[in-house]
Amino acid sequence: MTISDEVLARQAANQLVAAACVSKGVFWSRHEQAHKEATTREEAVAAAAPLVKICRSCPIVSECANWAALDSYTGIAAGTFWSKGKRRDVELVRNRAGRPLETEGQDPGEQLAS
Image (cartoon, rainbow, N blue to C red; front, side, top):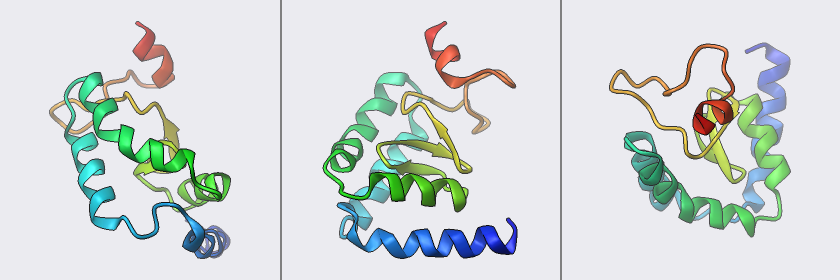
């Protein structure tokens, strides 16, 4: 991350005080952990669903998405799953080695459709 990216990420993070999730840290962490540990699409969706619902009512979803990308965030933000700052499908699950179940260079949506 460059210094300018870091400054932009900090500025974006400052806007998160108005987020719908701001007081839900422990709840959020539990659901993100369950999403991370999901071994099926159904488990991943069920773990993320309460967080996605909160995001739908959030007044700063676009700012949150901007922050997630700039900060290389991994977890649920702006109503979707992020992996190292890249937007992914909430249904994405990981293999036993902790890597997403997708082939190199393939869009996660394409992987899920197959």
